[in-house]
Image 1 (cartoon, protein in one colour):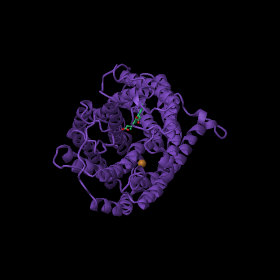
Image 2 (cartoon, rainbow, N blue to C red):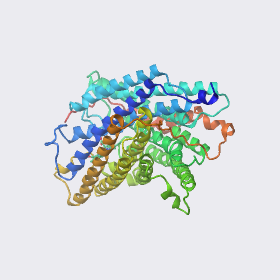
Image 3 (cartoon, rainbow, N blue to C red):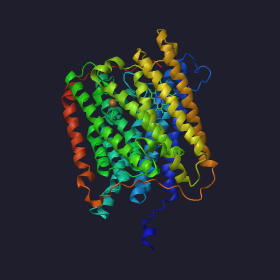
Image 4 (cartoon, rainbow, N blue to C red):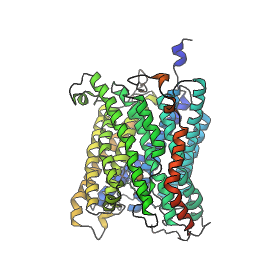
Length: 552
Ligand code: HEM
Ligand SMILES: [Cu+2]
């Protein structure tokens, strides 16, 4: 057998099916979620579709399903399939398939419990699960099992990387596996408070095993995991932008050390910032809110490093394709490739989303936009576009790669990406605008008696943007379903794009850029500094007395 033959890794069918199953379940939930988003947008403009299309009983049940499916289920299931896939591909060996399918079963059982709870209107508590709103126990247990699934992924990927290192002493972990492990490790640490909240407090409370809860303590635990979760969604998108997209545009990764450093920095910096969601919560000392405010701006640093490195990498591609001048390279990028277009447009809106995030994060400016529609205006640009549109861009090559069929229509994919971009620009503008005029979030605005005249126009922006987004989503799903079942077999398997670094430093790269322990330790230390006294105070004042409410 030649060396090349040994190096090639032919992925067995059952392994491909595992990844496909994760991805398809995620997207099936997104499909439902998007449709409910459409109904919400219309509601804001005064068009109540809930009577005509009775798939949910009311706005808040729909909003719960929209939030839970889009940001919790779709993301987590796609990420599971994607991260396991890139680990296996880049380390050139199968994952432990038994453990892989076990993970799938645990997560799917959890998902079925959650689906049951939300569809039967027994858990219309919105995706933040804020008490005293109380859900059916299947909601808390179900979501907890999904989190356990992410820990199992950490186990699978962590073991594989350790073993790879043993077999390849002195070498640096391949970038895709390196990034996958950084993501799962960060989330493994960050998800502990959420697990404590769901399993230790909310689950027994919903089973009437404890009489009441402490609302502030619960919110604090929620946001200890609730901010880092956004990096759990974003890092897999970054993984594609840094290590795959440059290859797709014919370029190279501009700087491997910088890329590695950014991933490693996200491990400690994503965690100690949860209080920036609680600026208006009484009972948390202002000094602690201030510390979290400063640390939030620290996490902007690896984000800016990412913007720089990714843009520089794309530029190498555009110039290699003949692009000249300051921006001429942009037009030379392969805009006819739906995977590329989706991800480039996702980045453009991410820039705006990031900037609106700075407004949310500022202690003083937050007071103006807190709990207004400005906040959904922000996160539909970040998770709703930077993440969701990038994941769509990835499946444009990943699903054909896994099935061995061609993508049904590349043109439809390009149109879909542009429609998403246009629709989201309009919808997010409407939301941010209404928010700045004081319109509250999480409210069936269309039927609010206090609806103000100046919210009318922005609400139409939201509704019209929502319609364009829904059409985009529809095109995406048609294309995917046709690619799964109708498209002809590809003559050649679609390649996995893996970018090479511009300068290959190989084993010369400092070893500390390939080690996690120090960064994980720094994360624990920072969390201890940023939270301990505040938590001690919350626990010493703990009063588990608030009973559950089910107004839905
Ligand atoms: C067709 C596309 C979409 C439309 C029309 C849409 C529309 C909306 C609207 C109108 C709201 C309600 C705001 C409120 O009452 O506060 C909302 C909330 C939300 N959306 Fe979307 N959205 C879409 C896609 C997405 C995507 C792709 C994601 C994330 C991946 C997402 C995540 C969320 C979340 C997390 C909430 C808040 C739920 C909550 O507060 O519990 N949306 N969306
Ligand atoms: Cu945050």
